[in-house]
Length: 99
Image (cartoon, rainbow, N blue to C red; front, side, top):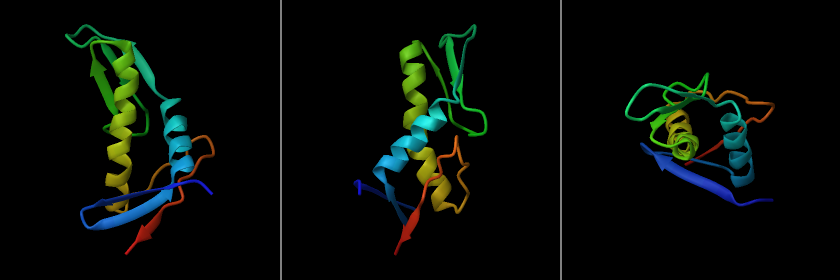
């Protein structure tokens, strides 16, 4: 069995298998869509179905990395508010609430 990832936010604690969390994030990131826009930060990326998970950066590399960082905050926030997480490409997070 893999290592467990544990997080507490707003007095709610949860844990999930690290391997599963990594697989989930990778599956979500495969759905990312990128475009070049006319802006000071010309690289824009978003993940359809994941409101608030987007990036607008100066380089394509940072535009690909930033949504990963946002997801690492977005997932615990959704869980702490008892909001569901979509199943992505057959990957479902098994989340256990910890007292």
